[in-house]
Length: 411
Image (tube, rainbow, N blue to C red; front, top):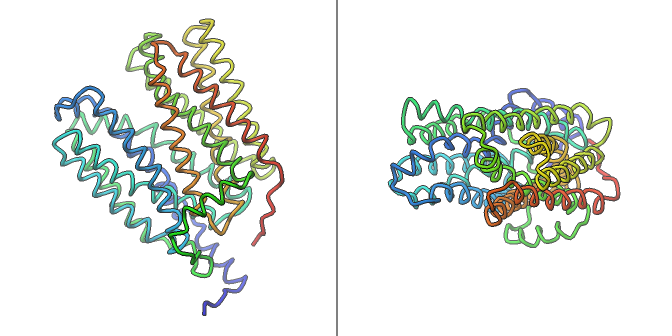
């Protein structure tokens, strides 16, 4: 028999968990998605040469990582709901370190691809269960506020990742980058062991893990949760289209020097950080659904301008870069609110919902980036059309599927 804690015990326990150190560890966990890829991007040409890889082989190491990261979340979410958050994260970090070491020791491109899948399957545990831990500690709009704050911090990773990776490569080798990731995984594991479990035994889901697929299907039949997930997933498709398309649009089509591409890309990340901070300040007063709808509407307007400027050639580089900056900036109003809104609908299944959200977001991202590659014609138009279609899907989910307010019990 499990004794239910009293209200005062629950409140005291949650106060002990809501410390800056716990939030810093959660932010580090949620940043693994970015740091695992952005740190080694400058080493791709050197890896291609050193491993005698064929054209495009190193690019597959990115898509294989995204595939492992997307599917792996579907496993870790139900495990976290059943056994708690901390131990699955520890196991995931061990897998991440093993995968990173495997990449460093690889002697061929196919080996790197395989170890990247192992690396991704471990990294995603911290991301999916880190989001669930936020939901364990906070409810309603406060959860969205904390999610925005953490996402502002984790936005530093893609901003600094390529620069730090370049410096490691300058003083060492491409293998040193992956050994650095091993060290980051080990340090994060030690940090996780210092924080308490956020999901007490009495709140865990004791249903068998074999029913996870059925649980995902049941969740997808709920229009409200599908609206939150769809708004974020469609937007991610547009974001990955932006990531895949801008190097060719800026450098190849508009002849921006490669060394200045990072400045344009970094401007978008600064926009994301700014809107995440704005969302954190406004979400309690304005509401997560309303801000998410403003974000999807703003992204759709920016996409329309992007398509028009790309077709007409209006404004040249600025005519494309400015709408893209606005589109990317809407991340701060869409992503945190879509994740927290979905998890608020089923607080007792936060890990499972977080896994479903992450899997569909990164799955949509793979589709968005693949479409840009398949439709590539040497102009920004394929990127613009994919971003436009993704924006329409995002705004439709936000306005048409999310109707009734969330009725969530408060502690």
